[in-house]
Length: 166
Image (cartoon, rainbow, N blue to C red; front, side, top):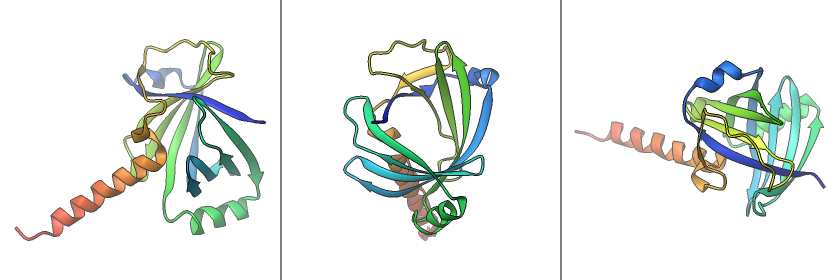
């Protein structure tokens, strides 16, 4: 069974940009979310994938990813994601035995930067690059769905304040 084990971090500075080996633009949409499980549609390099993730058990979770026809992916992304499509550039960085990615969000989550490293098992050791800051693995605030909700609330609050007569 495919398992995803990843650790997530904030960034300490922008020096990671000097070691990027490849960057890819992604578009993600959540099709369903329930009790820690999610189904996501993703586009990258003109490839569409459907991903099913199970709830976390420690750092690990089941993850099943399937390539699907791009025409189906576009319909799912545009008509079934409630307008909550995330756009980001994923920057790939090789460090030691592991590949790190830095997700640089655009659009609704513009300005958010998160680094991740996928590991073969929960006890795997890895080198923490100098540009990596505080670990946020498992911190609810940094889950994509929660970041979307928070940003939408802030935008709605700002719009209400702007309409309020002075």
